[in-house]
Structures are given as C-alpha cells and as structure tokens.
Length: 474
Image (cartoon, rainbow, N blue to C red; front, top):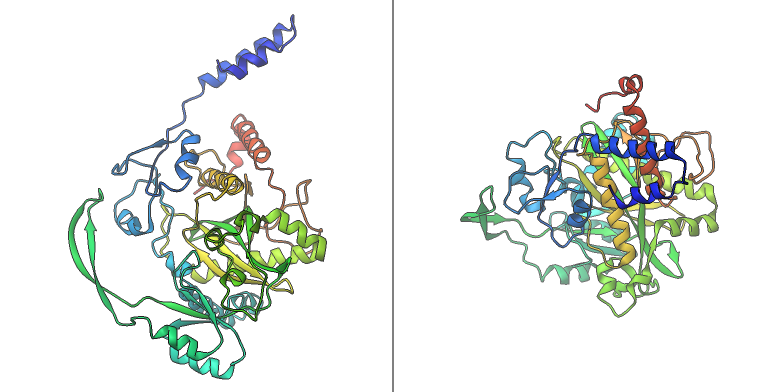
C-alpha cells in the first residue's frame, strides 16, 4: 500500500469502520485493475527535456538502435529512413515526411499564394485575407530579378534577408538599398555544389559514402513590417504551439501557453544594423550581456496587458484572427503534405503584432526548441510536452470526443471547432457569432482539467450505456 493510502486510513476517526472498509475496498479494486501496457520510446535528441517527460509517465526508454518502440522522437534527417519501413499500427514519429512545405519560409509563402488563388476561384473571399498575413517574399537567387523590379518601384521600404530554413537569428540582416543586397550577394557562392553523404542502414550504421549534388543555399527577402506593436518601446513577437494530429482529415490542437519574445534594445527604425533592436530570437538575446530572461513574457501576462490597454473585445478579435491565420496556413499545405497515420507534428508559430493589433505570420517551425533556458521555460515546455503526449494517447485513455486535454484546446476537427459556452475559466466577452476554440493566454488550470477528464472517463467506463454512445476513434 502506498504511503498516501496509509495516511488516508489513519486519518479516519476511531469507530468509523465502514469508512475504513470502503477505502480498503477502493485500494484493492485499484490493485485488481489490468496492468496498463508499457509504452516504449526512443529519442535521438538528448538535449531536449523529452526523455524526462516520458520517463515521468512511466514509459520505458529503449537504446538508440532498438526497433521495438511505440514512439521514436527522431531527428529530421532520419525521418525518411524511418518512414520507409513498415511500421506497426501503434508506432508514431513526430514529423510528417515533407514538413518543409510549411516550415521553409519560401515554400510557406508559395503555398499561401497558391491557396489564395484557389480560394478566389472558389469565391471564398473572406478567407483570402488570411493568406495576406505573411510578408511579401522573394526567393534568392531564383527571384532576384523580380525583387530588383519591386525595389525600384518601392525605394523607401525596408527589407529583411533570412535563410529559407534557418533558425536562431543566424544570417539575418536588414537593408534599404539594392547595392547593400548586391554586396552581400557577391560574397555567396550561388553555384551547385557536391558533398559526400553517408548512407546508413536501419540501425544507423554507415553502409557507404556517396557524392550528392546540392543546390545553393536558399534565402528569402521579405518586406520588413516596420510598424510593430511595442512594449516599453521594444519590439516583440509571439511564440505559441500548434499540434497537428492529422492532415487528412485536418485535426489541430492549440496550446494555451506560449510566450512573447521581447527585443533587448529599444526599437529604432533609423538604425537597422542593430539586430538587438529588430530581432527577437531568444538565442540572440542570450548571446548578449543583457538579462535575456527579463525579455520574455508568458502569453497570459501579454494578454492581460493588451486587455488593459485595448479592452476584452479587441483582444478577443485579435486572437480569433490568429486562430484563422493558423488554420489558413495549415489548409494551404493540406493537399501537398504527405499524410501518414503514423505521423504527428508540434509546430512553433511565430507571429508579429502591428501597432493596430494586426497579426503577421513570420514563420512556422517544424522543430521548435524544446530545450529549457530557465525555470519558467522549463515548466512551460515540460507541461506542454506532457499534455501533447496525453493528446497523442498511446495509453488509450481518451474517448476521442474531448474538446480540451490539459493545456491543449481542439481548434479544428475536419471543420471548425467552436468555443463551448462560457465557464469560470473562460476569457473575453460573450458575442453572438460563434468563436473558434482558441484560448491563447487564458487561464491554464491543466492539472484540474486532467483530473476531471480522468474522473469522467472512470464514470463512463462504469456505465455501458454511455460507452456505447461514444463514437469510435477511427
């Protein structure tokens, strides 16, 4: 018997034998329940907190060469090799094969433009506005001539150069003159190159080394959004998390928690060479002498700040726009992503707010950082991952009808999921038009919700009539 059970029994007043009997029966019944299947996992990313989260759930970690696993948190480089095998029904991997259709900046822009044209043909004008929530983007070097024509007609705008699939603020700079871009461009080798690539077997052992033809590194030039919303004179962007369980049909969950990344220097459009003033990347801020921890706000704090300044209705409209932006971006790649029932993906969305509370989609990260930079970041990511694995439901504990699981809300299930009636933990005004089920920055009483979910499942398991009414997950 566990220590907690002993404490419960000894706390019962003398003479209350019936109470003691009930507690003992409850404990005996728990012991008699069939043992839950042990979930096995394999991880290729030791620097993340994923192993710690999974071990805390009672899952078993297998070695790096084992093929006996239920979850393989593999690197993107190994994904193709894993998906080429015949996977068991219960096996899952954390990426879709061609995830780059949404995570590469040039591909994302291209897919949004294509989807907009489709919406126009279908006369769905309302949704087209969310396709325009991404800065105008040119591929370099492929669309260099097109950009030259554009900058000649728009000489007063500011532009930003980024690697098409880079991260952590590397290789990013701002410019206004075409000669500045040309000077940078002249330092790059734009010819196709070759590289020696190792081919490995299913155990990760090198079979042979081959020469592979590689295209030049791709960059994008985007029109810089120069009217950002400022906090204490500083630019910031939002990082929040979206979990896609399936593309066919599209099933999307969105986490309540996230954070705002605030620049370490005051925003100054007259000094476009100061990256600390214009780039919000956490890794960039940590590399400086400033206390970078102070330049990150939880989304709940940001939501309260915006509500105090602009009111509930304006903030609720903002987050509804962000929900539509997320769905539009995912629908833009729905037909090109290689759907696989063994795949799921956690995306990190980066969104910028303008001074008139309009959201701009900057980037979608297929491999958001899951390393903790401080104690608050650790708690956020630990809870995020724990709830994500509950949604994944390898333990088979959910009914498949849940609208909320811990800190995740169901946003899209082959169609829009509307917000349920107001409850004590809801936020925002009640409006007549149905709202998408997004609760970014709202109260995240995840432990209480998970307890309620567990109790509800136990109640249903003991009621055969209710269980018959629950639709099959399939």
